[in-house]
Length: 410
Image 1: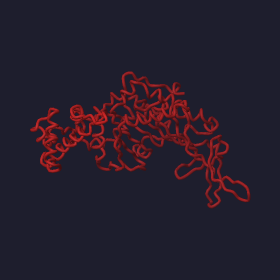
Image 2: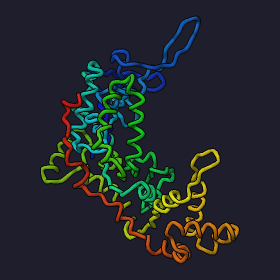
Image 3: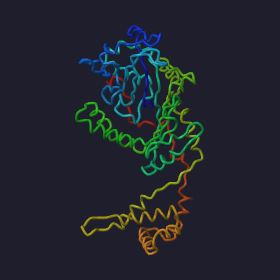
Image 4: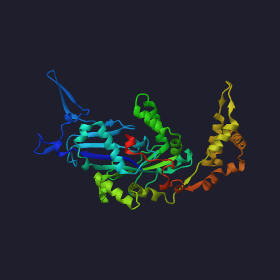
């Protein structure tokens, strides 16, 4: 899926002027921000009772759409390799088109069209001054997902992946419980991350719920994200996201001018090839190569904990239920798995240890099984990691999905 698109649109030559810099002999292209009808910020100074505004600029702005906003900023002077003033726009085409990015289109043309449409609707005067055919693609995100069986396994897989490194694709280190990253944060080649999509989705949906009372776009987005079929589909998706940068494309002779890139993608599609999928496979191949042969220990103790709570939940003097003792028993059980019989015995008093063993046995685990728990866990619960991290390109969308049109998004 095309998950995010970042583009730069220069101004037409007729919209800019060539100005002389006071501290150098060089002249620069510049556009007058005050003529564009956009909100501006500046440095305010007070001198001799008068107010002076200097260094006018356009800060990054969130431009409203039917669903989630589009980020854009006007750069009113040329700078470095940017030879003309222009506008940067960033957005998730999938979110603009349908209100979510759990799945969506791969078409760069459709993504660019919906982004340009909302810029035109928001600031028509500014849009008329832009040289649309000269638009450059700075980067895009390609995302594909693997489906995991449950929450427990999902967290285990993410934790394991946070330590995976291969060749130049090194783990960045700033990982979280549900997300891990590879490569430099400011890399100009590619950026990779992997995360549990349902966790991110739930947080975004809750944010839309909080905003919906005073934000019509948030209300539409919340309704789109609350489709029961979507809520079921997003569960336990492990998403790999590759940010493909302009330099990566240039090194492979892939065009970066928007009209050329759209034609290139459509040419590949005519050959039965998916450009977004091929970019994703190329940028993530080091990670999947590193997973070959790797194994992971499964820890599936939820049934044991449930049995202990069901058997050993107690009623306090105040009449409330307490599962504290059941959870103490579970800690002993986990210690047996991790450290073995003898070490667990030495870590607590003998009467407490054997009382715990007796009470755990009441849930169906024999003493012999508990004595061999550490050994059996190491030999029986080891599985190939790629058994879980399987990206099926034919199952990235549900069978009920209908791809939206740009007209629908407006």
